[in-house]
Image 1 (cartoon, rainbow, N blue to C red):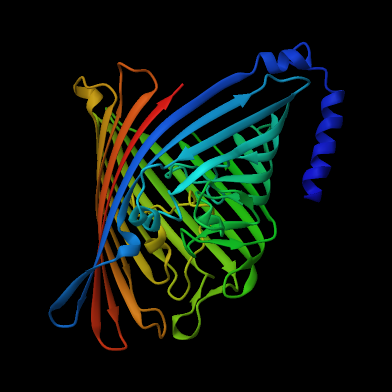
Image 2: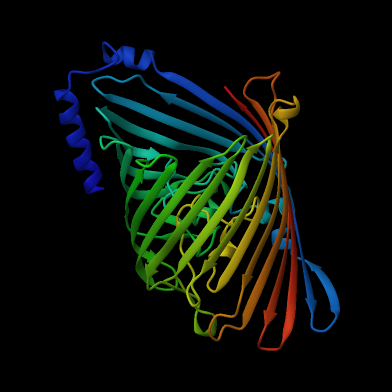
Length: 449
C-alpha cells in the first residue's frame, strides 16, 4: 500500500493547489451528491448428470455438488459526492440475502451465489484535474485484463488505485495498482460459506479456475486505447501479479491486444474483431501427467453483422497454444471471445483447444415491442490431448436469452437465460468415455432507481 499512500499525498497537494471546484464548500459537496441504487431478485437453477460409458451407456448419476437452485435478493445503494477542489467521494453498499435456499442449493452455489450479509464494494477518494481522473480505494474496474464480473448477484470489486488520462487526442491511457480483491461470496474468498464476501489478498485468475481464488501479493496494470483511425479501435493492456500461490508460487504476466473495426454499410454494420492474449508464468496446477502449465496464448477473431432490420449474426473462432493454458486476467470479467452465455470462458482457455461460437440476435423494437431483445447461441470447444495427459474433452453448448426493459416501469428489466452444455471426456488410461450434461436456468429481475 506504499504506492497508494504516496499517491494520496500527491492528490491532496494537487487538489489544494487547484482553483477549480464545483461545490462552494465541503458541506455543499455532500448535499449536492447523487444517490442511485438497484434492487435485484435472481433465481438460478442448475442440474448436472454424469454418464459413464465405454462401448455402451451403463448408468446415469446426478452430480449432487452441482445440482440445486437458489433465490437470492440484493439491495445496492450508490452515493457519489459533488466535487470540491477536484475531489469527490464514492461509495457502493451491497446487501444480499437468500432466505429460502435449501441444503442442496447451498452446496451447488456456495462459491458464487449463496451468501447473506453486506459488503462495501466501493469506497474511494476520487480526484479530477483537466483530463486526468484518479481513484484510490475500493472500486469497480472494467478492463480487458482486470475486470470484475457482474454475472452473479454480488459484483466482483478491487481495492487499490487507478488513474485515467485522455490528454493525447483519441487516446485513453490507464494505469492501476491492485492490493485486494472482493469475490462473489465468502466461500469464494477462502472462508466458510454463507456470508457476503470480504476484501482479501487473494483473487480470481481466470483460466486457472473460475470459482477459486488464489493468494497473491500486489498487482499492477497499464492499458492504452487508441481511436485515431476512423472506425478502428486499438487496445493493448499488460498486467503483472506477484507471488500467486497455486501448486507453487510464481509471478504472473498477462497481456492483451485487440483491434475492432466497424464498417458502416447501407442499412447495417459489418464488424471485424481480432484478439491476441496470453500469460507468462511458471505457475503449475496439479502434478505429474495431470499438471497444467499457464505459459500460453490465445488468438481469436470474430466477424459480425448488426442492425440489419433488428437482426444480428456473429461467428467467432479462437485457438490456444498446444501445450499451455492461458490466464486471461484478474477477475471473472476477463472472458474470452468464445465464452458462452452461462458457462462462460473456462473451456476455451485450456491448452490445445479450438473453440467456436455462433450468435443470432433480434431486437423486437423493430416490430414495435420496445425493450425486448433475444439471443440464440451455439458454442463448441474441442480440447485435444496435451502431452501425456490422460484426458481430452469436447464441450458443446446450446444457449438462449431474452431481455425485456419494461417500458411501463422505468428502471425495471427482466432477463431469462438458459444453457445446456454437453461435455465428452476421453480417458486414455482405460480407453473409456465420460459424458456430463450440465443444464442451467437463470432468471433476473432488476429495478434501478
